[in-house]
Image (cartoon, rainbow, N blue to C red; front, side):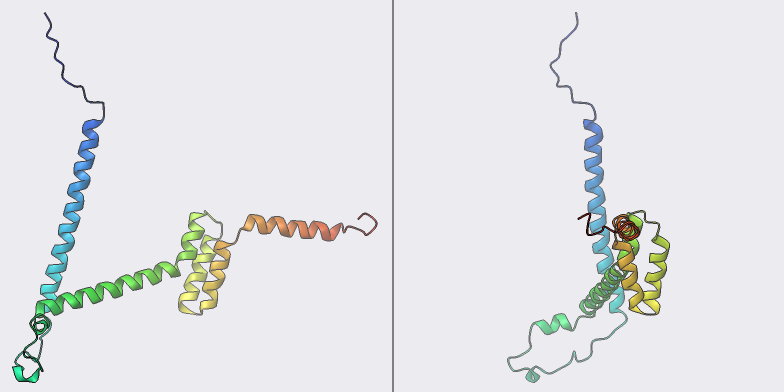
Amino acid sequence: MSSNTNLPISPPGTETKLKRIAATFFSSVFKIAFALFTLVGASVLLSKLGTVHGKDLPEEYFSNGYPSILRLLDSEVFMGFIFFVTVAILVYVVYLLWQLHEVAVHRAAKMSSAHTQIVFALSLCGLFIDKTWWVLAIIIAFARWDVLAAEVSNIIRNGRHPISKSEE
């Protein structure tokens, strides 16, 4: 006799989907933990580079006694954190400016344009020589060359065979 158990059968691929979800979750947790560890570690390491002067100010120096925020501002670790955040923001702004500068190159590469090399060269000229070259690279990268070619062909075709007034 065969025993008939009523165990639910999971659809195929359920285990791999659960594994992917677990891997994504643990990957996200690891990235967040790594970012926090980097932030705290950099703050502590950068705090060793500086000294906060004025820790020994008398309480009478302040109008309402010793402010509570001063303890935080006197902390070298907090100043290291502020230094790290400031440098990170500056690096991110420089990265964004570079991405803006390279928008023409990315557009030409995305469109698989034949002009990718010239756009790259003009972008570099715009970076080191004059911004006019960068504007020219933007124009070349974002122009619809197929439409421009068709319109130029129409202009040439109409110029060779002008429509006379009697045909109108």
